[in-house]
Length: 303
Image 1: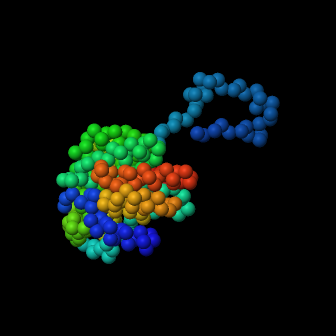
Image 2: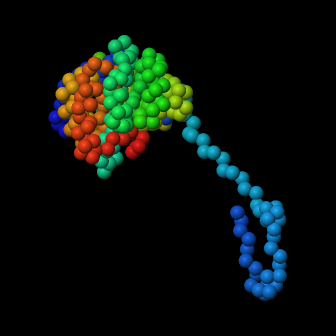
């Protein structure tokens, strides 16, 4: 990440990711023996279809592969409860912040955080993405889903989008209770499990399959918490470009950030603040990127 973008991330997003700051997934037949003459071999009548079927060995279909069993809350507490984290922040072990090396596409991701002040739905942003057939990964919090059931159903049914897990109560993911931007983090492995698995189970029931990607509230983690997420079958998705500064940037600033996103970038924005700068800024930046040949992908398309 460039120095200027890092500066933007730390300064502008001091309420960072404040757009989410609402509250604290057979045996073949053998050839005749060399001792048998060709004439003798030709004299042997060939088996008819019924006889061939009768003599064919029975085949047993392979059992369907079962997904790994999800560890329980108590198993994870036992596994990681005594470990002390050594990393904390936006970029720690277990967090993917860019697309694979050599990938020329860009991934747009948008969070919807839920809770008081965070349950909005930016229809203008979604309508723009649909009109230009721009795919995106949408990280939805459990509270936002509960507040927007109709919108969720339409988004989940649209193949242009994939749904990611944005947590149950939108908390930074920590095993020691660390906070970020004034939002209290999870305190202990058990609370990490609750934050990740609670919404994952909700999404699995609604979507018919578990989510593949997770992003915490504020996108902050420690390296023990990210191991818990991995054990629960999800990939932690960070970002390399802060597209809307936690839904605080004006449209012109969003245009600058999104428009300058390099190939391979994962861009973060928000879809829960209609009337903000995110939708008009994205709408101003993306057409130029498309005209220049930039391809946009969902995270699962390349990860």
